[in-house]
Length: 315
Image 1 (spheres, helix red, strand yellow):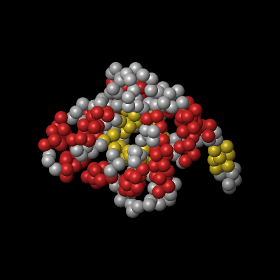
Image 2 (cartoon, rainbow, N blue to C red):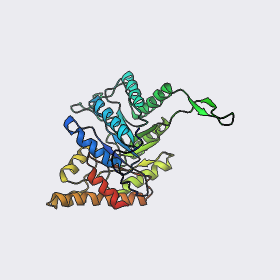
Image 3 (cartoon, rainbow, N blue to C red):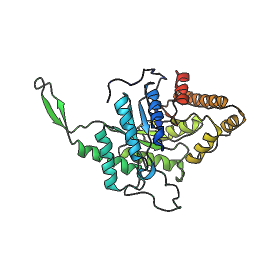
Image 4 (spheres, one colour):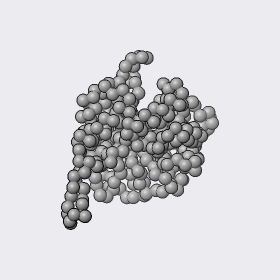
């Protein structure tokens, strides 16, 4: 990892850690624009930048390239998304090892969504059936790859070392669903699944999109009462156009936030819509931080401007 960022630092402080999510562009011509965005995001001082992963490995190489760019050109930890979709056990094992060998020590383990065109009831998963199984695999690969380390032992003499089974820490995040996963029977089941992910070795959860602070605060409190100990980071996206809002609702399955929808629809200018989206995200983040959220995860949509504006207004 580079010892100095490749862009001037404009580190921001909002009182809690923050992070970003980007996605590899499908068009290689957009790679340079994404690299510029990554540098601008890295300059704000995030805890990590996560990089999404296409279903069935459709963006595997692009994800790895993006992660390598973050490692080589910033001081920020990249978080690589991995999914179970159409992945064999051997293929997943090799993929995890590839990322570890590249220097990645943070992952987001996801079951993954059905590829487009999947029929209802059709099996779209591979040998791994859940995010919990993928979490266990990541830990297992790391253990096999690094069975022990040398630790300094100054009690013996200067420069002395000893073998230790302690390994380099690997951060494994998983998804959380404050308003319920589309396929879950109840919010209780969602919390039970989250507990199973933690038992498998997950040490961080990041929520899917939601639009009201109480959705997250209520869910986080119930999870804590159920025995969950890992932090749950709320995911926020500045929704700066009606089209983007409709797209996010389609992807997430959330209920349409009518107040935000109306505000965006009646605002005639692009600049005005952008301001509405940023202010909505700022207000939501303020409520979450005041309610005890341990951090903020911002879905950047590969644009630095709106998310950086959110952070600046939270300072």
